[in-house]
Length: 331
Image (cartoon, rainbow, N blue to C red):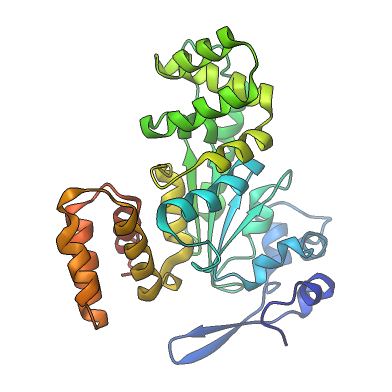
C-alpha cells in the first residue's frame, strides 16, 4: 500500500491495482481495470487489443498522477502543461498540487484511451479533457481546414464516448491555446514581451506587436507565425517566465480547473486564495475585505468575506472559480 509512490505505480499491473478514496465517513475501493477491456472492445473498437495492457505501458512514473491525484486535467500539448500551473499560481497564489489536481500531457496518445479509466465502475474521480477545436477564422491565412475538421471530429467522438459520464468533461479552446490566450486583451502584453525577447530585427518586432493589437484575423496569423517560429514549448516557457498576477486564465481552462478540483478545493485553500488575491489587488475600495480578513475567526465568517469579495469583484479569477464551483455543485 502506498499514498504516492511513483515507483510502485510504475511496476504494478493495472489489473492488480486497487485505489482507495475517502467518501464522507467511508472509504471506497476502486479498480481502474474493472470493465476496461470491455469498454475498449465495445466503444473504442479495439477488437484485437486489450486496453488494460496498453494502458499499463502508459502508466509510467509521470502518469502515476492518474492514480494519485484527486482530479486530473488531460491536455494535448506542452503549452498547456507548462502554462496552466503557472497561470494558476500567479493568479490564485496556490499550486495545482494544493488543489489536488494533476496535469497530464497525453502527447500523441488519444484522449479517449486515458479518459476511459474514469467511470463509475472504475476510478470515481473527475477528469477534465482540454483540447483545441482549431475552428476556421475567415480570411486568416494560417487557418487549416484539415485541423478544423480534426477538431470537429475529435469533439464528436469525445461527446459520444463521455457525454453521459459524470466523471469526464470536455473543455475546448475555440482556436488554439496561443490564439485564445492572446485574444484576451490583458494577456497581449505577455505575448509582446516574448516577441521582444526572441526576435532581433526591430522592424519585425514592431510589425508583430502592432498586429497583435489589430484585427482578430491579423492577430491570429501573427500569433501562429510567432508560435511556429519560436516553437510552442519554448514559447510557453517564455510566457510562463513573464506572467504576473494580472494574467487572465482563458475561461475554458479555468472551468477545467473548477471541474477537476471539485470538492477537493477546500475552504482552507479558498481562504488562502482570497488572502493572496486581496494582497495583489490594488483596488481602493477593498479595505472592508482586508478588515474582514483580519477579524474573521470562524469558517462561517471566512465564507461571508469570500462571498462579499466575489460579489464586489466578479471578474477576478478567484470569483470566477468560485462561480464555476457553485455551478458544478461543489460549494
